[in-house]
Amino acid sequence: MMRFAVAALAVATLAACSTGLSSGGNTPSDSVTVQSDYRSVYQAVTEQAERCLRGKGQAYTVHGTVDDASRTALVRVEAPFTGDDVARMNIKGEGDRQTRVDIAMWGRGIWNAGAVRAMRAAAIYQVPSCSTYMPSDPVPEERSKR
Image (cartoon, rainbow, N blue to C red):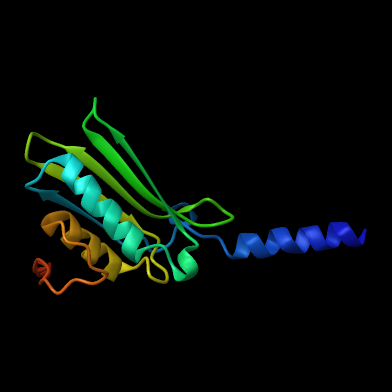
């Protein structure tokens, strides 16, 4: 009986501490088209993830796959124990020198809007840095509906 209670408590604790993009909530994201081939962008995004998104003690793992036939790649940062993605970058070649990158982060800890901006800069300039000093695109003002 005691084992059952301990197991139920452990499951409840893990459920309360859900991680990753699939757990819903605030998921900062962005998309950018860069003037570079998809393989170069994949290398820059992977290096950025390895350098900046692995967490304390390097507990989170970076996984990447490339499909040359479809000219696509995927870079994921996976949480320990749960296997949930805390960051995901989908890369799609749209020609010889143009690539679209879709970036999504968990929205907590180091996987926040700042990490999205830094990943965007890494994809564009292919220089990894855990923060970006480049100005972002201006946000268009909303017009009131009067």
